[in-house]
Length: 490
Image (cartoon, rainbow, N blue to C red; front, top):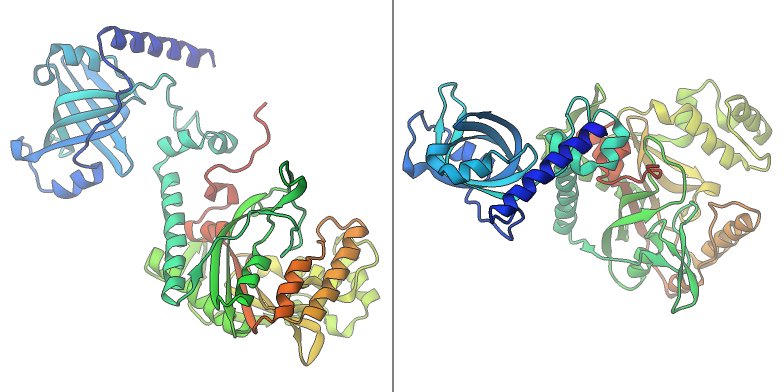
């Protein structure tokens, strides 16, 4: 810290010297003609002889600087890459060179000159005009010492992005993932919409909400935990295909694949069931992977993942049969409770058979699902917005898909019977009254919408952060969120 303070004092002294020379160290604009990547592409064939037709103007941050008396080499970094510049006093003039010598690593500068190759074949700009665009008074961290701590990198993402171009590439790919999905949905005549972030009643998922208060309306509001119920209102209103990329908020713990603030894609498709949505899901994801990587096979954390459809499909019961040593269909609720307790599941004692089966799936199956896998036909108790299976009303038409041991998406044949939905709302409200912080209230307006009639509908939610983790080979969700939530620094 003391060393940093000394360096900052030195830089502030240089800043004052630059100002005293009549130079604005923070000018208002600059007009580059090229990016560094464009220079590398356009001048790939230039040789060691400077040619005035190879003139460029660039802007970037000084990442290295080596002064040698009357000349200096530096590397500039812009949003597309790096390039070397060569600054000589004889070319820029004595006054400009004197100011240039007060530039530091981290400063943002503009430079004009001629592109050529050095004797070591490095593409370089022979500079004849140089200008300070932003004086950096805080020294950049050392890449291998100052930014090794993950917590520091998350807190100071701006420094992380400067020092680690591969981090920036993750977020470029994240944007490409979202755009690829958006393009495919638009091609299939889905309409992108926006629904409220502040909601008078939270719902659409089982989670503890963040609460706030609207002074003018004199009422509590909740940051949305899901946008499901608003999107289904639009299905009622006649939008047959809708989707939204939404920021959702859940007042819960943080770990490798959970963040209190995260991004979801939710889409709803009228006149479809969960089997049709299943087919749409694997095609949507596989095409996104192929657009990003040129293939449907990727490596995630040293494991090959193959997104080529069709994906593996198992009912929840079948998956437990496959990955455990018992058959939940043949066991009583008490026997299942004993199995769960012995496996370390914390239970209150009043759980239904379906709730225990869902817990057993989490323990025995989820972490083992490496390849893309659909798990379908869930217990009704854990799926309050899904339609019952006609042949077995204890189960619902719901699936989740798992990749590399993570749940990435969730889908239903959406419940559109307002009487059945009211009953399930009442069960949730009862659980809320008993202290279940993840249960939710009765949404009378949503029930009113269903009473007007909602067509058969399939719905899908995909966790964009988790999908990005997979497609960019990042271990933690914090590595794909630019500014993840952190504990206070002090």
